Length: 473
Image 1: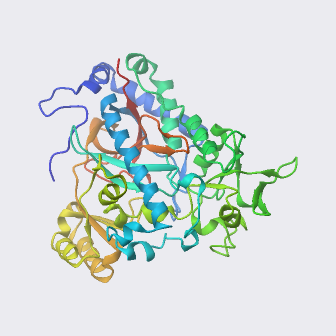
Image 2 (image 1 turned 180 degrees about the vertical axis):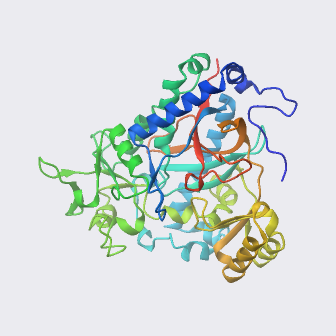
Image 3 (image 1 turned 45 degrees about the vertical axis):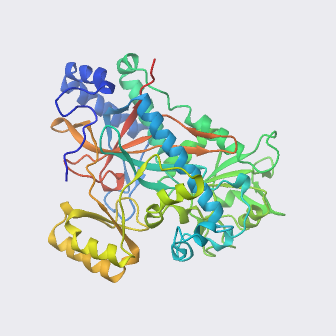
């Protein structure tokens, strides 16, 4: 694996311009002051209760995601280049989903194999021919991006179902502003705190019916036992809308209502944070107690918007990901602005042969996997792990893809031994409304806290950082 690109320090030891002010500040601040601020940040996180649940972990049902107090910094020009690519990709995802559930021209053209759609567990035949408000499916996208050099960003994954993590982006910024006001005084950092205003404007723009009315928006949560429940309640509070569970809503004459102390109130837009399977027991899983009976009939009648739309998961698995450059070319007639990581589809015999011959050099992922689970990082795996994956690949090759082990960029991170480089990725959040696309500058930077580790997922011990985009004069 090649040497990782360091986002602060050039190969000759000089400091990259975006980090010049921060580097000077770090060279002057004593380590004990940094440690004190880190403890303050942890105390604040604990006090306001920012935790996530780890399913199946009996020792720690609720955890803090470790927060690193050294920000990750991008220049304004880097961000503009990145955001153009994110907008292009999200436009293509929406066109792909509209096509898959209607004319299926991309399948007839042979660009994407039919079985990747029809045999995909996230494909919802119930959405065939279904008109969705404003022809938009992915209203909130979390596109995971990694960097390998000064100029090159790769998309690692498209999250088109219910992407999470935005509460950490917002809380990280608030805590940094509280703990390091002197750094913000010396750097022109683009704001992210307007995200919830932008989200609310996006959600209201998606309401069915007249755009002049004031649509009623709710956040639908599976409840307090969900791993991201903190985020659900945080967002509802910041948006100024009701946080509801399925039992708080009902459907009458194909219209969704919320129960209130003043009687039923019509609901126009549901920002739902539960999976397709559970949203309506009359259409999907009949044993679901989390959803709203009849919700899909109201949706089919065009009386409510579900954000994101039902069936978006057919566009964001790791096998479909490998076709995204072709999908962009097919619908937009443009070359992708952001690169895909080269991907071997183990469902194809020649790809599978290559992967089996090079397991020790590759990253192997489950097509529908998430959270860093079910993954092999070949260069860091022992013989037993490699042989275990060899058997899995031979048994069910369709379930896996493989990629080269990228040298993810590193950022300075405050760890036990002091300030040291650690690998990072970035999840920007792309909001697509009926009026326009909105992307707040930055996103959630996740950091692998163990030396050499490439796994940034919080469920695997990763942490988060504040992400700064510097405004230019």
